[in-house]
Image 1 (spheres, protein in one colour):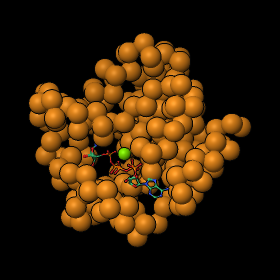
Image 2 (spheres, rainbow, N blue to C red; image 1 turned 90 degrees about the vertical axis):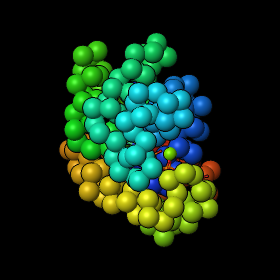
Image 3 (tube, helix red, strand yellow; image 1 turned 30 degrees about the vertical axis):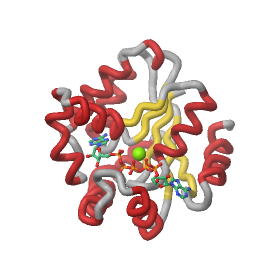
Length: 183
Ligand code: AP5
Ligand code: MG
């Protein structure tokens, strides 16, 4: 099974993905984590990505698609995986479809975590990751609105998109996710 998690910054993609991949025994592929790791390692992709991650803008598609493409070659992805924070725009979604299509695979399920902006802001400022400052958070919200939200139509037309109420405790959100996944 190939699952995509979509949601604005702070929606709980990482939190819920960790739970769900533990249960489904599939790898958790977070492009944000991969890019932060590449920056920390001083890897070539990290050198390209750093100024985008730091300011909350989307890293260029070719860089991200290359990073995820390399990860997908690992044998642990053979029976499925969970994408957290990828794809983030229609170009990335098309690249993913093309990649999976070569192996007769596709995205099976898209889960969108919905959380009001005031709650997101509170969660992110509480966490305090390197890019969790007010200015960068506003930019990340803006990128979600303009780049990522149009993807919802793309996956709705394919009939694989499900909206999840992402408010409440992580456990409550996870139960809502399981109700969809178990179907
Ligand atoms: P990325 O790392 O994906 O960040 P993001 O989308 O801004 O989302 P977050 O990781 O901040 O939030 P989340 O939804 O994972 O929530 P979490 O579970 O952590 O991307 C970072 C940057 O990398 C981007 O800005 C961009 O530059 C680049 N990038 C990444 N992917 C890219 C791509 N595909 N293309 C181009 N560029 C890309 O939860 C947040 C906090 O809330 C935590 O502290 C958590 O403990 C808490 N929390 C979670 N759930 C709850 C709950 N139910 N109740 C209370 N608190 C909760
Ligand atoms: Mg995350």
